[in-house]
Length: 131
Length: 129
Image (cartoon, rainbow over all chains, first blue to last red; front, side):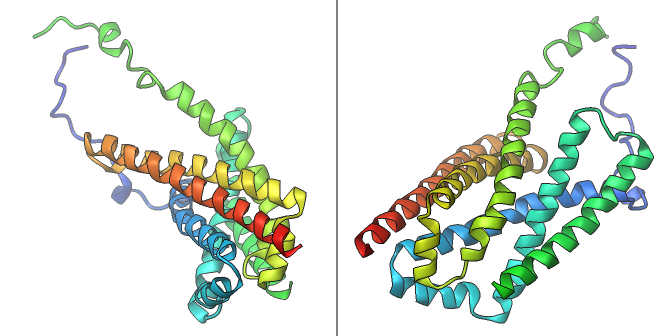
């Protein structure tokens, strides 16, 4: 069998052929939130460097970083992405121990990280807005 | 028709020769990140966007200072794994190698920037008394 017809066989079905399901969507979201967190990393570094540059620079940059409507949306997105990627990562650490791999449990975990990340992001944002 | 066996074809390709080590590195890094993100949200996040004096005072508390330093190092390290995956999966061979050179340099650059900022904040707070 080793040398039979390699190279021009049909490809296996890919994304466009499946109806989205929770395991697939929650997995894709881990990658999107992971790479999206690059924005969060750069923003936190920006904040840190602005603070290092002294009070005047910090005040000027704070207006850009925190002082208008778009900043609130971006920071909420960053917080959600951080929560989602963390919960999704913890799910993988659980799976690495060969726990929770049964289809029913795995799907439940998928819904938990989707719901958990939204709840976590909203609660975190509210607390940070109050403090 | 060649006479290559399945055994011969598979040899050395199991984990692309370095997959197991990569898996373990990401796993160790993930445990560290999960811990640090929670600590960051509790201790550092309230300082992000706070007035200058509050930031200075908050960041230079010993525990917060160490947490933020570890967070900078750990995040930029972990970030490289994520970007590596993007290059491996979506970028043609050849470009991915060049991409990883840039990503590695950028990761260390971000790390250096963050640590520099932290030290400068510490010095500023010491001068301010």
